[in-house]
Length: 415
Ligand SMILES: [Zn+2]
Image (tube, rainbow, N blue to C red; front, side, top):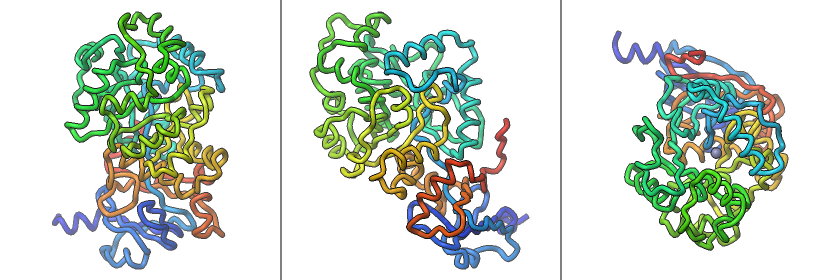
């Protein structure tokens, strides 16, 4: 079969009342042409139809909105077997971490791999096409689950260690992952700086949990409190260590870590000057507001980040700190609790922004030529107009009124 004929055989034309590409304003009566798992044209239906072969397979999604697969910027899929095992809300970070340690200690040796698969299915069933996924080593390889792409971050611990090599878990290599520090209170300054230097040299994103809870702020400022007790209990505190007397953001600035490829995960307790610094360095903020609420650690100032122009993303965090891996539910939480954030911005926070932050610009997070064809058809209902479309999309999404439209060829989602 010739190349042109083969392309024609694979081509699909999708039409819906709304096309929400995210990277450009919504189009009424929109159309998308896909070939072999990629978008080749998107826009007004009558226009894109002209670019199709005569006998293209056509799918009409009625009054739905076509929307890109969601991008979850921060997950720990290897913790997915813990779903439902920790009651929410927890009174604070200390109590939550104690429960997490107990549950993780009781795990089977192969738990991370099985847990990863549970998480991949959960993410996919909630409309996700790409995750920024943290592993402590157990899920550092791709699983072969083709329906979900993972940017794999290999998270290191080691407050009393001084190199990535020393902090790597046994039998784990960096390979195609990105080595990243867990946080400023669990990883030493040399390892944080080395991780960033390596990510920078490879042109890859760098991520760190930062300013998640007040205990972290206290520890860097005075060296006291829960983080100190934890390190002492684990035998990880260097006797000679002195608190820097800085905020975590100032501390990371001092290590040369803040730039446009740095993802600040949680970012609940930044001061005004921290936010100004993060904006000056063009960092990305990754908010997990339901996780923060469930752990009782505070409410992120998303409005502040957005008003300063920081690229901002939403993420679920893990099933040890959230009820599900549903980004539509996370977006709905923002509409309910942060009413000053307009719904169209929230849509960017679950698609376009995290795709860029994870190094997948043009591949995920938008419906445009060259992007992966993973799309959702969200039933926004009749009577929606451009002004109400974004809110309707989030509300329908969190009710589960959507379906997958197109997926990569060779999909094995039960695999
Ligand atoms: Zn996390």
